[in-house]
Image: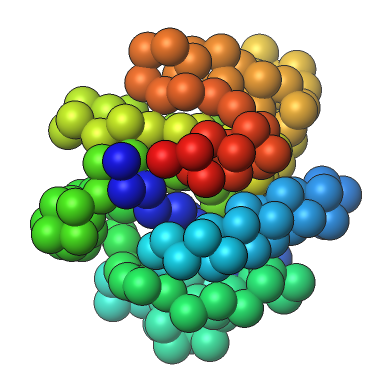
Length: 187
């Protein structure tokens, strides 16, 4: 089965958000870059997804006019087989990505990027509902600390664990970078 790697929202825009923390960025980029390198080595397609605010001005970090809708510093450069700009959480809403994946004969997608519990999880659920086999790679996703409704902290590591738990076996096969690359190599 042909696979494609989806690299979601790995963009400089996040560095301007008040919640941005660089603490987990090196480990995340190491995992993300290994996935990219592995897909390149197999000659498999990599899709780049950018989140773009529609009609935003230069003061909006997610607006094209900001100059920040570009790869996050440290992301391995790659030639995207396809690139989309999205305005919703799912990379499959309004982008034509679903059509492109179908035209390319992609049966399995591997999800990576920023933010674990938002655009990565939403795209995973959506892709599963549309019939793709989905592999979700938590170590190749990045998120940031949040607060629970009662104000107590919800740590990024806990968010990744929660996301992996709710996706595993329901919407995706949840695995690490090494297992994902071995699985993809095996076809």
